[in-house]
Image 1: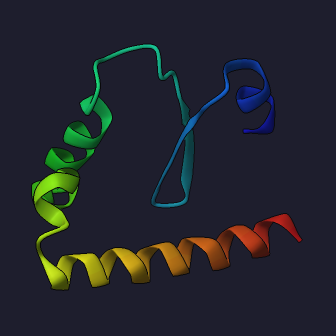
Image 2 (image 1 turned 135 degrees about the vertical axis):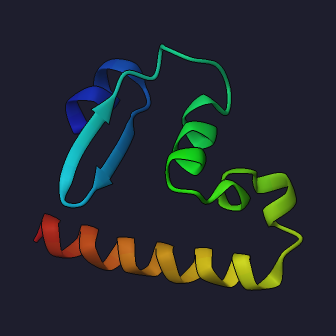
Length: 78
């Protein structure tokens, strides 16, 4: 990921069932990956931040998801 970030200035990392993917961000269009993931996971409500931000329960779920990801990231990096 660090190499991709140094080279491209950004990266998109996805992990599904412990399989990790570094995605080519040059394909698609804005929102492409969010919409694709939301549809694939049957969670379209989580793919649109413009509508999700008006849903308190969903925003709390995002907070919890981010905290869990941060914990996992820290464990991976140590």
